[in-house]
Length: 236
Image 1 (spheres, helix red, strand yellow):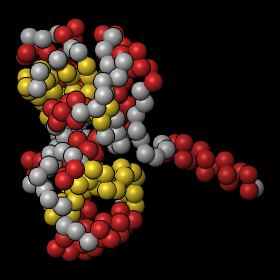
Image 2 (cartoon, one colour):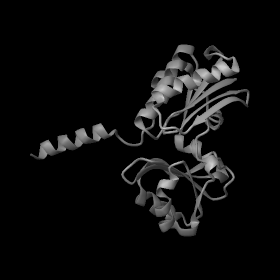
Image 3 (spheres, one colour):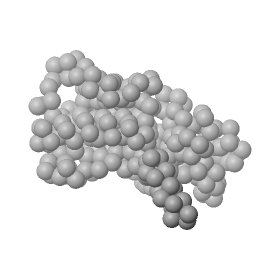
Image 4 (tube, rainbow, N blue to C red):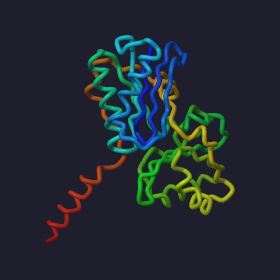
């Protein structure tokens, strides 16, 4: 079975082709470029390098968020378009779980973290003891709110993600020696890891592709501003 994996949920871009449990080709880049202009060329490169073609695919795994609205939409749109055109299933996986899967042998709590700006983060916490059992649900959190929840666990916490560095000083202030950082090679998403996680889920029917939606975990800023303006007018 041949899978294409696509992760554009945040700044890094990760693409992979996996055939029958073997990684055929993979590309990861952590460059601040618009995924709208980078994702499809990266996919084309993988097909060209492997001498494969889209018609060879049996399924697509895509990072469903949370993360950048634009990034998540681009990856999901590409995945849905390919899946619909090829009449193959699409499987979504949490972008945060993909990061946590990079450090599966840590014996305590793994916290995936992505900068959501203004001292907010997208984050989720997992236990590696039971196939990444969810301890704190994926969500959009104020940093202080997240750290208080992690502090209450009273366990060592391994933070993973390329944005951890932005918040690590405050993380240590709250958690002290219980705060640990994953080595930098593990801080970027792996599209082959994404595919591996997708393979653990039931494979949906191909015709369900239209019902697939991203997981944003918060409303868009424009929508939030519209709601705020609407409420202000109601009070005038």
